[in-house]
Image (cartoon, rainbow, N blue to C red; front, side, top):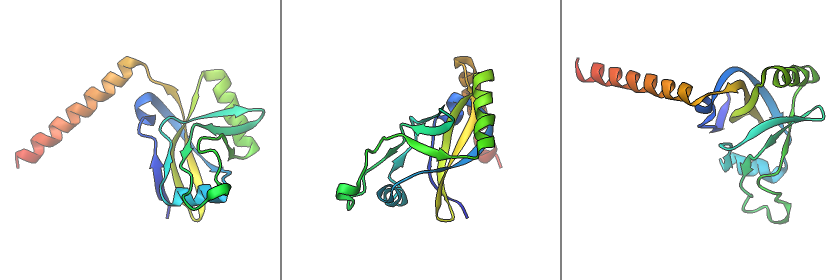
Length: 149
């Protein structure tokens, strides 16, 4: 029933995602209309915890064409909706283990917009190279199997 709106293409490439969490977003009416049109980009976004509240930074939602004066800043900081227990858990992980919070995807769940946040560590350059080598090897195997019936 979930309808995917946008994915972060670099999330799994740059981070080793250990866990995922779902969060709601506080949005205005024109932002929702723009998201329904698919005009959202979460490529260069990140999530941070400030004063016990969770915010997403850098998420670009294009202004709605018919919104005129009701449109807001396309890259403003948006508050995420999480339970206190979830926020405390995330705060503890980020402080202790040098964990990053990365937006993975944005989607509709019913009529609500949800943001999937990945909890993971940043990859080193050699880890990225290993992943690319594995992916390349898998593609070669698939290609060979496809061509040789």
